[in-house]
Length: 515
Image 1: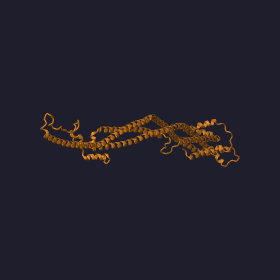
Image 2: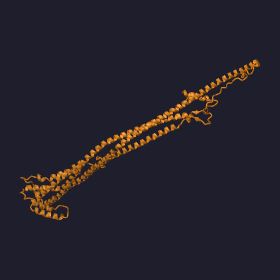
Image 3: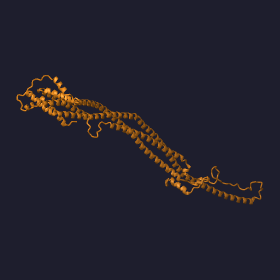
């Protein structure tokens, strides 16, 4: 971009090249300095004319500046449209990203709630398993006295756990382990769905960020297209003004040469020489232009010496600035080329942002098409999770029932010990009663024998034996023996337990001992 000094230079040069239009047409008092001006050699005026004509070659720069402005305007209009569409898509995607974020939060909440419930279920299962282990340990620690197994030929140590089917407990534990594995599998599957969803959202965000038109350049020198377009337009306008000043200066030089005696002929000759020298170069033929100018210029109106002096003064003053004006035009064109390159880069950046935004939008559409899958995955997770929870609760209830049964079994065993002791006590009392009864019977039998002997001694010789055939027979005897019941021992139906076993059962039933 041209500096502020260039702008000041353009204004000063253009102003100096407009002096001809500001010079007075008539003077009543001749200026003493004008005498020196009118003595300028015709060769000098012709040189100024040729230099002025050469300066008009900057028209190609002005044309190029106009082309740049036209192309820049088209790029600006395209960028405005693309930027508007890009921003519209980005706002829409921002709203959709917000929706996706809410869905992701919902999935994460569901997953986190599942993890929390899983930990609670594990604690519940640990508690239930601990209680069951305590109960089974209690049963294993309760030894069964050998007295209960007399006659079975099994001399090994037995405990309460040996008399129940432990397969039920193992089956429940295995079922719970299977449910835990299933819950972990459900969690892993749902976690994979969430991970894929989050990855797609992350990729979408990266695509949106990558297409941002506000990304700073490494040098930090990026300018908006509108600013560049304004600068290019300003350059082009200034270049056109400078070219207009050069054109007016050239016209003034032509007039000055034509109003000088011999000037036209010298100009044509120099023009022809210039044409001969420049015919192989890129410059425009000066002689041809002068000839054309001469053929189209009508006879000049009479001009006073003062007016001519003023005109030549302006030509001389402006001639010193022609080179600077030409340089400024070329400098401004170089600045425009640089700024136009920057504008094209910005326009290309906008195009890439537009293309990238469309790509990001297609990614969003792809995620949107899969959104129903992720929502369905959440619903499936909840359904399967609830099913497994119900299965776990059912198995935990079954385990608790088994534990309560084992607790009842252990309690019943303690009561069985007391029942055995009670029965044994009853049997002992019965035996005592039968023993006393036998002693009484034996005493009566002895008394009866004594009475019989006494009777026979007293009257036996008087009684015929056939009078009562049973008179000399022995007394009828009674025997009390245990009844033989199938499956019961002949001597005892109830085992004799040690007092320590019985007392231990009493203590445990009354809560005085560990269970």
